[in-house]
Length: 166
Length: 397
Image 1 (cartoon, chains in turn green, purple):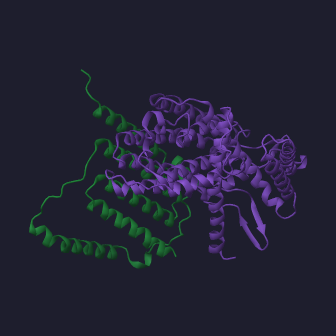
Image 2: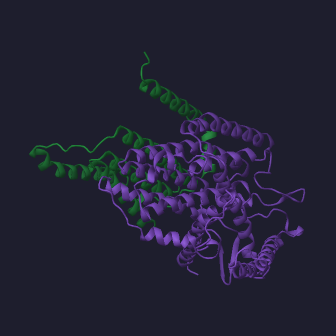
């Protein structure tokens, strides 16, 4: 059952990611990215990281992607214009891609032998309690530094994007 | 019984009850707002307008389903689907009562008890923004776009004080699962004050409750925050170009969101299905007493009817109410119905608050609405969370 669910959500993630690249309209790409985020949240849930799955849904799919969609809507970005590509790309594109993916698959399979596979349901420390404890004891400094970093990025974005008042 | 079949049956029951509640919530809203405005509301279709929701459903189904030529077709169809999907699916983690035993079956009155239930509901309400934003944009119409963008900006702005207001009682109750939250609010102080979250612990969560209710009004686009769908400002906002079933889908999504946030407020702040006073003082008889009084009132008015048809309908209603009162003290179904009564009455009080405020307050202007969220509610929610955290830290072992 776990293997079926994994294959289903992995397939949704991969197909959404490919769709993201192949679509011409930015909103379709944004929605495909939301599909990828949702499938990833389901995969985190399968692995036992329930808080991370919920955080992915709340923060990534529910807030960051909403901002992406807002920007695309407000800027009125239309569908892209497809440009003509030369015959080299059409002839060598897909075979080279398949060869590249095959090479990566082979390397990964040699690095991670099949006996050390992932056990679905083997990890039980993904609850909010465990993550909260770790965040406030062992990882306190990275937590605080990350919050300051996000604040700096926010202030920087506002400063860079404002209009000059003459 | 097999887990799948039991879950299917429970899902069917919950879905049926939710849909009926949605339809009759609209009837209740029309009647309550009518009486606030000193008129009567629907009374022609069925006795006292009780079949009005059925008539509305038939009307919406048989209206002409227009597909304007200028819309972006895929997103135009996707938007109401997203809105309804995320609105209806949040009900699956809401517990309606305790564990029950029906014959050989032992099950909980909840579809699934996730141990991150609160985060699940928060995440889904965040995803519901897409339905509104896509509807406004795909309609290819400046009023819809403005309504859609305003509504989505309002919803994501008020998610922040809502999440902070939810975090404060979670600090005291120490769990994210809804069933555990209600169990942590069991018991009584001094023998008669219930340990609901608004009365409990180092800091009674009254401010969090008020903040949550205000943020819930904004999340569900209800008055006084309903500028995005105001008729006199924006034609009809983001659902201008939608007709028939797609409009009904947005309508359903709004009422389903209302029911979900009322259920969440009940579970987090008002103690879920915990009774108001202990069983020793007779709280098991409260629903029976209320229904018997209601039945007697209906029978009394049935004998002095204001309108000729009431001579028949009111005594029937009276008898039905007295029958329901008897069901609450019956041996087998009484313990099942009792927690359900407390839960439903608390949710009903909050829904009545939604409808009451709709009939009473004018709506905010959009800049007032946004500045209220960012300059008032967010600081108040942060201070509330800080004070709660400080008191919990000082009084915990």
